Image 1 (cartoon, rainbow, N blue to C red):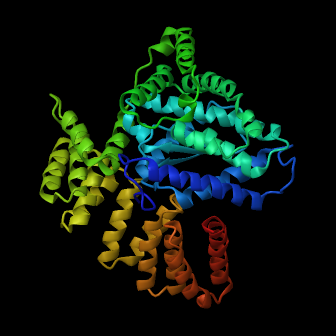
Image 2: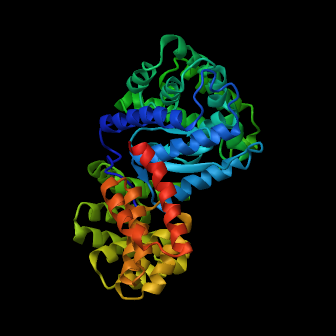
Amino acid sequence: MGYHLDAPRAGSRPGRFWRGLVAVILALALFVQGALTAQAALFGSFGVKDEQELGRKFDVLVRSRMPLVEDPEVKGYIQSIVDRLSKSFPPQPFPFVANVLLHNSMNAFAVPGGYVFVHTGLIMQLDHESELAGVLAHELAHVTQRHIATRMERAQAVTLASLVGALGAALLGGGQGTGAMMAGSVAAGQAAMLNYSRMDETEADQIGLQYLTSAGYRPQGLQGAFEKIRRKQWTSGIDIPEYLSTHPDVGGRINEIHARIQSLSAAVRNRKEDDARFNRVKTLIWARYGDPDSAARFFAQRAGGKKPDCLAYMGQGILAERRNQIKDAEAAFDKALACAPKDALVVREAGRFYYNKGDARAGQTLQRALTLDPNDLMAQFFYARLLDGNGDKASAQKYYREMLRYLPQDSEIHYYYGRSLGESGRVLEAYLHLAYSAMYQNDKRKTASWLKQARPLAVTPVQKEQLKRFEDVYAERQSVWK
């Protein structure tokens, strides 16, 4: 229920991350080339089905190589923004699915097929939900306007591997160095197909602003986000996305966005910011993934104001627990609960802390969190583990099954569900869920081991179908591990 892979923290150096990303690009070239028809004029008609297939396979690859945040509070929040924006789109042939990558770069990107990826660094460094929504609106406009699909259709004589390299340079580059390295894998003549991307970016600015305002957001969010990203790069050298790092006319683009905003009605321009949920998610990300010293300063500044900041107290508690400063964590959570006794997130995080600490208050606190928010998946997860440990396996397993409806690729849920099933005597299902857990952690050895133990136990038609479902997913994951 946290993040997957041995991931860098959100304040870490980017080298390892981008080396992994280059590996994704190279693997994607081989993966897709083996999956789609190989021919010289491959994308003469790059249709919706092709976009969906490319996007789905790209998603599998990213999940197999990159650190993803699976916290439902964080992921669900990003999905809610994407859903709100997508209501203003023209009819689309596929849904838009949000994911969160654990890295400190201020970046987001969307790929054909409707897969959206947001970096934790972007959330941490912005100040308003409208700014985050503005970046997402811009990225989603690239998909709705079929910019990548159109490039592929025009690249009649380009190999698929080269197209994938170009796609990586356009969408996944974290900074100018990385983008240049990826673009260098494309022959000089083929790289020319990226030249018109300035027009794509201008259109994405314009359409994105329309999406942003139609969704009810303050339009200044798009301009503010771009200005913050550019300013952050100037002051700290932090990685910035390719759509702001490779185009010398970015200042002109910001001015154009400003002019368009000024032409909107006063009622639209003067919309109020609503950052309540944004601040909650930003607090979680800083506390769990931010550089500890930077996070401590961030929360100290917020907690030191004249008005009590209950979320800052909660953040200090999470951070202290992460630093193994248990007494400080307990004091911070006590302060947070006194400050916001009916805040479901604060109560949930306190309950999670009590559970990890072995505190008798865990059960009561987690129950209170679920009363305040019955749909809180993190509270359900820790309450299920508490029930499981107390011997109420039927109730615990009911929670695990319900959580997997919403988080089918969460390795921790699969792991604890598998253990519970094994202790209940349901051995085949136990092995399969342990295999799912290992697979979603990209642990090849354990996945193979659990599957080997499961296979002989699949006897009935239902059991054989359960085994087949796993093996189908496993085969796809294996193809990107090679």
